[in-house]
Image (cartoon, rainbow, N blue to C red; front, side):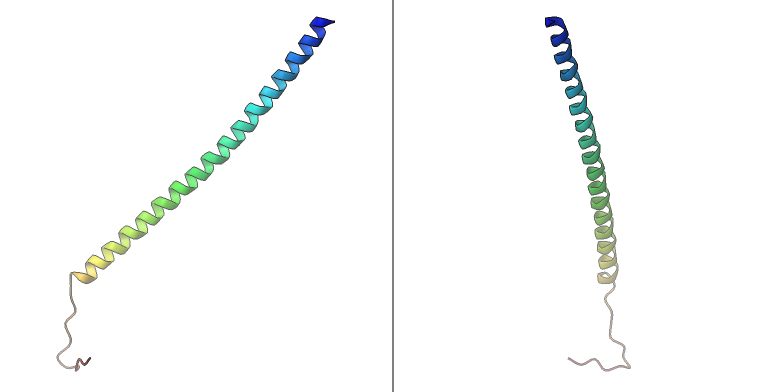
Amino acid sequence: MYNDEMTRNLEQLLESLIKMVGNSNKNFDSLQKRVSQLEWIIREQQHEIKERDNLIRIYSSHPHEPSPTIPFRF
C-alpha cells in the first residue's frame, strides 16, 4: 500500500511538473512574439526617422532663393 501511494504521488507530481513546463513554454512563446513585434516596431521607427532626417538634409542643403519677379515681403 505504501508503494501504491508513493507511486500515485510521484505520478501527480510528474503531471504537475509537465503542466508547469507546458505553461512556461506558452508564456515564453507569447513573450517571444511580443519581443519580435517590438523589435519590428523599433526597426520601422528607426527607418522612418532616418528617411525624415534624409529629407531634412536634402531640403536644408538647398536653400530656396526668392524669385526676382515675385516680391518677397515680411
